[in-house]
Image (cartoon, rainbow, N blue to C red):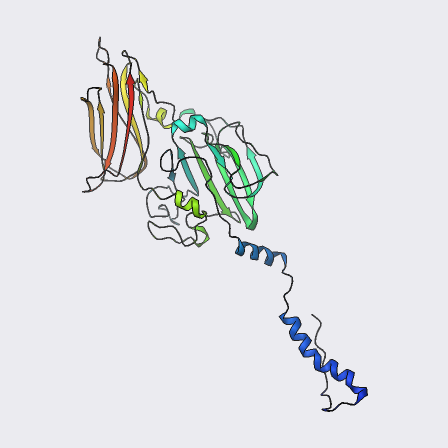
Length: 364
């Protein structure tokens, strides 16, 4: 805007010759007021800020599953800034320095293939799709520098980025530079990179700084409640409710086996032969706490208890797996029918279990 020029006072009754300068002098303040009141074109940064204010960044569900039934959040973002750790609800479902949100999927749907979805509109920055799907504890594979495994990184307006880690090899459907829409399939949940179980790790960042989707940029939270401005859209926020303790998997095996076998989700035999080496029931829980009482029971087809355990949990554990079973007596055979395993976690004086799970296997 040009600088306002100085003006000498005009006569109260100007002559005809002096009227035009007088009008210009008299109207100038009015014109300046109009110009100051008129809207100005916003710079690009202001426009971006206005757009962000009008449409705040939000996240949709990043995978296709029935949350709370066949998929769960096992590890949340660590919201403790110090050497300790806790999730946004002040619970123990995290670990020190964890900056992602881990969606665990049950073995049955993992084997079928669980689509991973873009959580927001954006442009693909990078992809990786050539790492094998193996339990890193079993394989001992060197993954330094590639801990995320097969992954897709998507940039969003306003300095946001989302990353989708541990995807199945050969499943990635997008390429760098592709524009994607929220809900578009990016790949399948896998077991690649630094991981011991099939899951999707969702990473959210703003200007390269990790952000917890349950607290948003505010970062503050009260126990058992999300922050003031979580990033999830309304529907997803209702879906991904906080589950402190849950049974996330159970199955049977007809032989002795390592717990790591079941963690990968490949040991679940719904049918047995009468000559099977053993009948083994396994179950996995998340969010068990010190002092919890866990009870495992294995029943024969006639309802007889053939194995039973009752243990006191000695420490908090994000994930805990337990086994119970019976070996086949020498020269014997298993009676036909359904064998049933049950696992329950009892907490404090409450007679209602904090979580339970049940599975069956048929002896032919």
